Length: 416
Image (cartoon, rainbow, N blue to C red; front, side):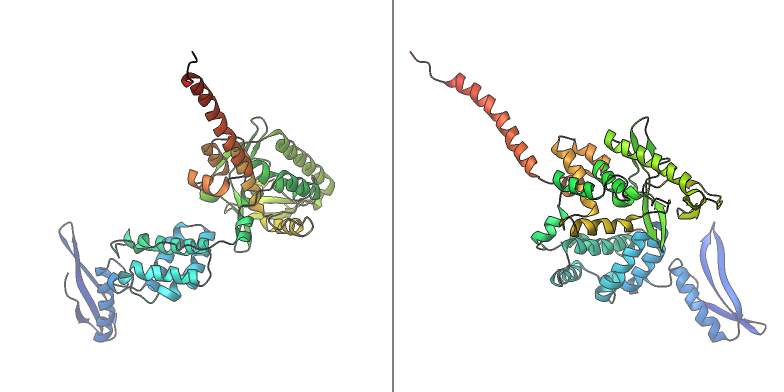
């Protein structure tokens, strides 16, 4: 690489250096117009350093963890990851990673430093799930530092272990709560057909959808009554204060079969929606899907150049209901029905567990729930219920009693 040179051209100064040859030809790099030689040297030196580092404004060996995280966030997270992930990573970087690790050089970050950081987070009372999430955020960033950046040779996070964190009985009960038939009947009695929460409740219970997926169903396009199929294509999410359609979590677009009870509820809702639209007339609220995924509401007499959709859950006058609306339903179940363990996700847990208790294959449950892998299905959503334990004992007895009886007959002594 050529040395930096300066020369005076007229009344101004110019810096220059020779870049890498292209097709065997010299590639001089220069810029002029500087008032003084010192100014040309300063700017030229910075330009040459950036050129030698392929456009970077830093040397990897001198880069701090804090500056690298900024670089990763700008060049990877904002370009490739979803809005919610961007917000989540920004939160974890600002509040958890930078304050403890940001001061170190990236090249000197070793597993023992990261392990001490995670252990300290555990001592500060953070949950095991939180520890996993903040470590995962750092690990994702350092994977990018390995490739494509090649700032470090290996990711030190792979040697770090999440410490054991005791889980309280109350927290475990809430996480693993299954909505038994008695509880479910009480909830449906409190929110019967016609209630704004009836369809979201039975959708989670009958289909195992995530709450955002439930509210992301378009009754006009996502339900096929001829094939008795529900298509899960969207989830309804809030971004920058606006409600938008986005692909389901893990891009788990899928089609699932629906049962007659749920199908009839959908047909009744569509019939009621059309009747309300006629009754409210110009005061009925229509929902439109904009090209960027945002949902826009407008009264019926307002013309909008976007496709109209029919969300699963709206008020009587057509106004959109969202996952935030469901918080009221949960509070009523907690307080009026004296069921503090209830939460929207328990309907999904319950659906998967009912399928497992009745012999559904794990892979079929995985595909129906839209999980990334079978491990998630087995570990998180199909709990070892009392019925499963009883069935295990029954199956063991069935499988062992008959062979034993036969074997006893064969080996019994012959009486003379």
